[in-house]
Image (cartoon, rainbow, N blue to C red; front, side, top):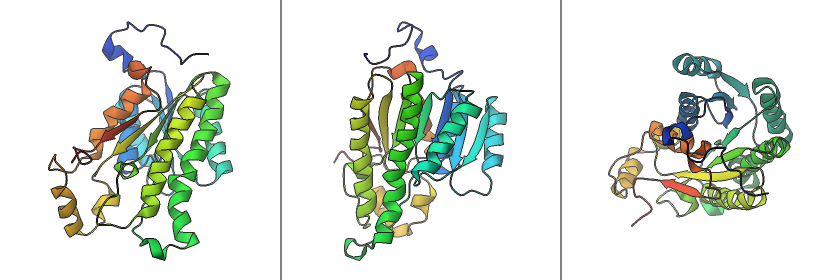
Length: 267
């Protein structure tokens, strides 16, 4: 069976970007990039399940986006590092929230820690990889089973420019390696799942999230000096790219990695 094609490939272009009637789920959806992904998908018309691990105000944020956009947004607590737990959550979302359907899943959960490579322990190494790599795989697997059953689906993975270069001066081998791994995982799944799903990645550069702002100011200055665009990206500037990948506007795109970094990886 060939890659799924929209019913009308000649539909007006803005209509192709619409997600009206779609059911979406986003891991790591209560803050940073994930929160903007939820907002963007909702603004495009999708009903969105916001998946989180720890959050004091997940329900409040979901309600605020729902009120702003007029679609359904609901928060679900889960743990992407545990295969059975995230599978149960994805299935619950498909059955209860989606009334038997799930169209779009964004595997966005991620963590980062600066650890010299000679100092990793099993615990600190696994702390990064259990979320950034294993968590993506378990989320993808759960979503893929739903997509295969219904015959159609769309998986988007948040990777990083760290997948294609080594950021300096911070020491984050586990993070870099995990992000490189998920990009290749996405390509592998894109080939394997051609009959029932599209799989793509987005690799952001330096984004104004807690992961970045918690770093020392001197590091921020050094990173800024290396970005040709000469500014840090606001997380809200990424949401349209996720809508693009989630929509029929790129129906022939699968296995791609969109780099959005203000030119950081070019020099």
